[in-house]
Length: 206
Image (cartoon, rainbow, N blue to C red; front, side):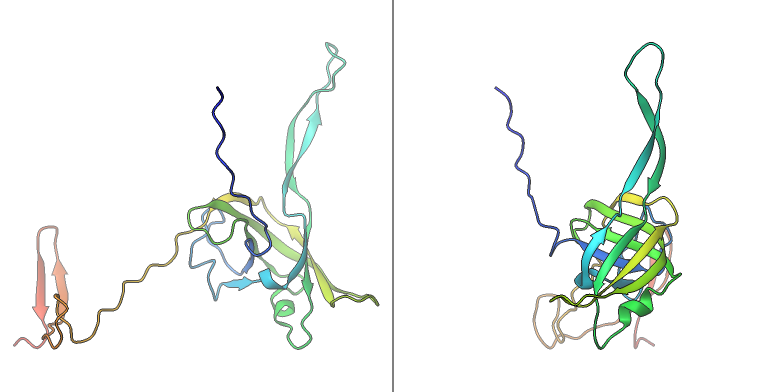
């Protein structure tokens, strides 16, 4: 009896996937939480109406031989076709246009499964803005503009979503370790440490 495969958790990309523009990134294979956060990150997600490209392709090499009538092939050079994002145009703001002028260099980062720390679903594309142009229509539709990108280097695919920032909870005021109010607090500063001991000084001590 064959074992039943596990059920997939299928999803709609709209409302889940994220599209970011990064100004700087130290290692595209390991984007950090700081790098995919503001102010380095500019979130494009909610303004995107259409997306084209953003895939690594291969140009296969045909290798026919006299021993067969079948035209075999081997993998050739990888390539990433020029890609684009189409945005809704904001009547009162040009924030996106300011971030993506012609010639701008940066990284388009796609979190395919959303901001899910640990998930290997981040695609990082080093790009340059080739063109940016408004689209015109007399039809009953929202105003848009299209940004075409050239892929300037090999993209990094299936990278892990970095862990989220963790902050310690702030202790309640005027409580001791047992939760009793009005306990006296002593501030302690670590002055020096070694592998075996630490010297501390209590604030207010003579």
